[in-house]
Image (cartoon, helix red, strand yellow):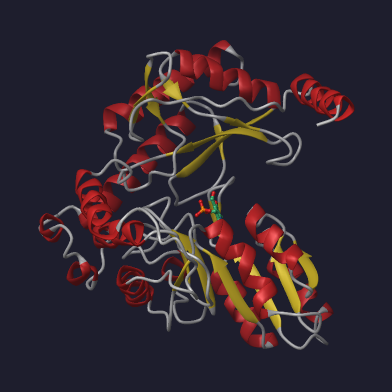
Length: 395
Ligand code: PLP
């Protein structure tokens, strides 16, 4: 690298620091769980992981992964369309298809990859993508790769979506694209409204259900189940990296790295509450006897309700509803950063989010509940938020 470039980067970093936008990593030395250990030895309660069902350190899943690694090795040393598909990939795809009642499923190594490959593959310049303004970065990147015309509608705003559908009426195919759950806000998309408009205008619907698969909806089948529109969504992408373990999407060919990883995701699916998963769990028979499927979701939502009720009684303004993502709205970016630091000193691990991740003036601490938390953990978090909030004048 030239000295000029390095000095340019240093200046960029300095200005990020001055603007309070510099992000430093916190290193953890334990497994991912409700309580974690930091590199400096501190033990803290984690309220910012996507560990919704608390499966990240599940003994059963770890055992299944170990067995699968012994049996199938560490990697495929090839892409899928050459010689990189194993029986476990196929089984996991079939299991996901049964779980979500889709015609087909294809695994990618992550949902980021799936969203990156989706639009360019399916649509061209004759087509239109109509995308929610708050969609995840991976959708935005994926849409940019496509030659289709782009339209953006205000978050969850059906009148605006309808106007964009009318604007795009001359396109060959129109695809409405939305997150099932908007991850910075904990808001579930209005899929009923979206599917109704799609039908009215002959458009297709794609939903990224990363923050919903496995726990949103009565049986954990995601935001389509929650909104009563199962069978009306054309394409679902999602991840097993939040409620369980690996990335997947419904259609088209991609690349999933290791057969072993697919094998460990199979039993993870059995921990979601659905009738067909058990027959795929031959890697660890103990999983078949695992009886906490529905309980995990119940515990998750009980924790979410408890936190939401208590923290709002304490005087905080919250965003979202009916989801374990509970953003505590603070407005000011430095207040959010400062508050997160002070909470960490009190043993509560949370992160402040500010512009450009969320709009200017809407900084927040996004908390995420997990089935792994106990009621006492939730109460400890509320207590710490209340103390720090008073100290900093946030409530
Ligand atoms: N889509 C949404 C809405 C997400 O929140 C995320 C992860 O944060 C992704 C996609 C990417 O998922 P993965 O971690 O599987 O790449």
